[in-house]
Image (tube, rainbow, N blue to C red):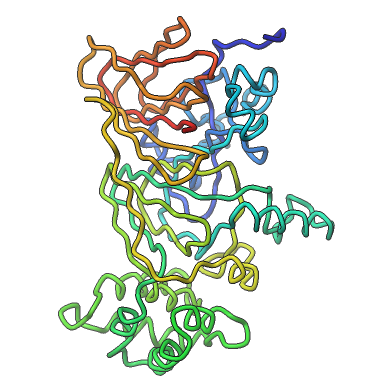
Length: 419
């Protein structure tokens, strides 16, 4: 190993993102802290160049200076996980991961806490991301520009593992089902959309709502939302869809995404359940707290329900408009304490670990780079001949050079890994 590569410095401190839709209390509460001074939407626990985690500092995944900036000054600069990996990529990531992905950590682990709905969005495939990234580089669009679509060359499949009840919209309903939801709404736009649906299918209806040439006026959107709010639950083909549309209208009045939500599948995850989103799947998270794991990318294309950059033509270019039910992934049991969600991609997998006996060591699958996040309780981790402890709200990075990992304790943890 090169000089300075210290395999003992593995504690992670993430980067909090203060997006407007974030909760002030959910993530601080997970850490046993009072509400933050502003929204804490996400905490990034990875090596993405936009916001890499720091290593070897702190006792929780978020520094107090990020939660209470008016009262707590930031600490001294610390080494990033990206820099730490770069000292010896093969030791950190393993030879097979370096061969497949180069010297970058393939996944990005987050804790996400939407108190308000996220944007109506889609993520690209690798091929689409590479092409879009190259085009924006050639055009001279700065990577930090707010109107930049492609921040990197990677795809962004993702899996959300619910820590609380987690609400989302994911993918399109079947055309027949959309027609049923729209039928009976006393609003001209709803009936016009039924006609478009009959002629152009689900994609035609979605494009009609979001394209600049045909998008409805704010008044027409409001009429549909009011009709949804007024429809008695007992008479509605989807009372949940009506509630979501009415809620979205309150937060984003006049946005065509309000009506587009009626075309989409509503999803409710209970704690411990997971939703997988492949490239091209239109979706929007609505509320709750979840651990999210994805390919290491920040490529997001938006069509509405946001104050951020919207690029409808680019979103439509990568959109998968096939009607399909949400992809819920059930975990496969590895042993009495460990179950793994095997996502249908090569970049990541997520294991949930429930330790119930502090005297019994449990073997955790995986030998490559791993990130372990303790959600409840406490655990003792042993790998590479070293023992370290974690408590709720702490995370550690386990390099490939440490080999097999075992744990004991009483607690609830998750582990991000490369298959």
